[in-house]
Each structure stands twice: as C-alpha cells, then as structure tokens.
Length: 165
Image (cartoon, rainbow, N blue to C red; front, side, top):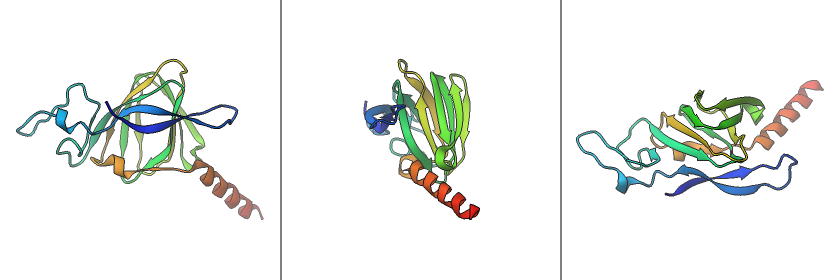
C-alpha cells in the first residue's frame, strides 16, 4: 500500500512539529481494479478516483489517521466532501483562520463545502481514526491545496486593528 500525505504531530506546548505518515492510500491502484461493462471494483483497496477508474464526477477514499496525528490545514477547490467516521474521534478546526471547532466520532456524517479551510486532529494517542470520504471531484488530489492558518490569522488581526483606528 502506498501512503498519500504527511500529517503533523502537534505538541500542545508549541514545540517543533514532528512528521508522520497519514495512512490515506494513494489512488495508484489501477492495476488492482477489475471489471468491465460499466462496473469496476477494487477489492481491499482504499480509493477510487479518475486515476484508477473512469470516474467523471466523484471520488471515494478510506482514510486512516494515526494516533495523535494531524492532517495539516487545507481546502478543496470547487468540490464538496462528505465524510462518514467509521472509527475513533477527530476534531476539525475550520473556517477563516481555522477558528471554529467541531468534534466528531464514529457514526457521524460530515459535509464540507468547497473552499472551507480545515485541519483534522485524531484525538486519541493510542487508536487510529478511520473515515470513508466521498468527494464531488474525480481529481480531488489536484484540487486540494494547503491553507496557511497562521497567515490568515495575521490578516484577520491586521484587518481588525485597521477597523479599530
């Protein structure tokens, strides 16, 4: 299995971050896809997208976030995301500057609108968090970009300072 992205392990005392792998599998499993006549199957795989099937309007992925890991702040350009949490507890910090907080657990469904910045924390130090993710873009990897929450907060503070004077 291949691994897709890096996750940040955060120290609550703001010490330098450590990197670890997020076990969200790549869509590089084209050779493992079988089917014909309009139905394709990936048995035991982790993702379907336009990189391994003839998807025109959506993608689906199984994401596993290791204990204590964080998926760094990012946003999705022009596509919607729906998530079903299968296992564990996560916290989404989201919105402008990622200042809003929502905690989710196994059994929760989430909907993320296009362009909403968010960062995802696995709240367990011992168990992975697992989620099924569906997106309205077959090429979601090319349309997911990093979000600099620190820069956004600086702009918000500067804007507030200007308004006060």
